[in-house]
Length: 204
Image 1 (cartoon, rainbow, N blue to C red):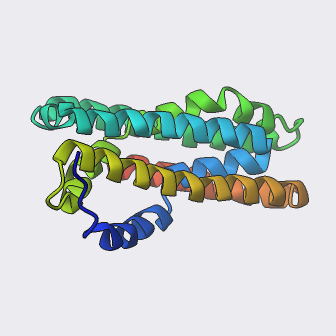
Image 2: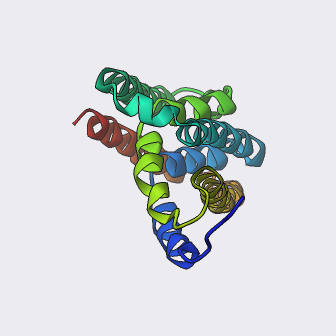
């Protein structure tokens, strides 16, 4: 098994740009951790990376290429992902409406099966699959393709997990200090808008 490390510095820089760019996973972790605490945030993080590892594994195994050749499969995943993001936005919006003059139960809603929510949010989004197909092969170099892809994928997922773990811990800490109606309402409104925008973006 031969690994080529000549492309590794460029790969790390590219990973940093991708990882630090906020996406639906970051907003989901931010809201879950602020509203429901560290444990719920970690469960959501585990769900997200279980799905990400599954998609990256498909690419390494060669199945990603097969799936990419069938636009109907990717189109179905795109519509399912868009529908799920729309569902998340609608759930948050419903909580905002019900919260007025009622007992705040949003924490119970957010904490409801955070692992499943994180997994479904990521697994129904074909962007990770397409990203792995387009991004990882750029840095294979002269190494063994399968081993090189696996090594690059592990590094990328580890960096993403570390950054998102920091989001979970920081959000959970801030959540204990900023758990005020005005702050949580503003966060929910922003997250609902982001999920809705990303849902439309997936379709378009």
